[in-house]
Amino acid sequence: LTQWFRAYFFNPLTRSLRKSYPGLSIGWVILLTQVSTMVLIGLWHGVTWNFVIWGIWHGLGLFVQNRWSEWIKPWMSKIEAHRGWSGLLKVVSVFLTFQYVALGWLWFALPEPALSIKVFAKMIGLG
Image (cartoon, helix red, strand yellow):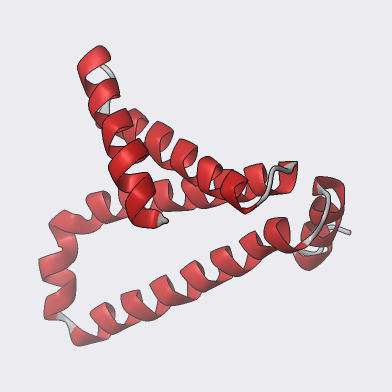
């Protein structure tokens, strides 16, 4: 599924946006293409608002990860030179990714957005 969406939707959309809107920053292109691709993958699982939200959630997560990776790239050689910092960065990255994906399953597992929001609020101490 991922390969199909990449080949027939994500890559053509990326090329189209870069060609049609040459002034559009790469950040906006990445945001639009990742979120729209993940929304379509969500809809493939089921045509409900929760799957649309699930797609938006994961598209935004991919975008943040992509931008973080680009931002930290200039410092990676210095970070990797210090085993302690490198190891800490990996542990924190895995922890945050797991938490984000686990929270995203609320949208996938529950039947309605209102219920997902209610459970999400309770999980972060707001409900």
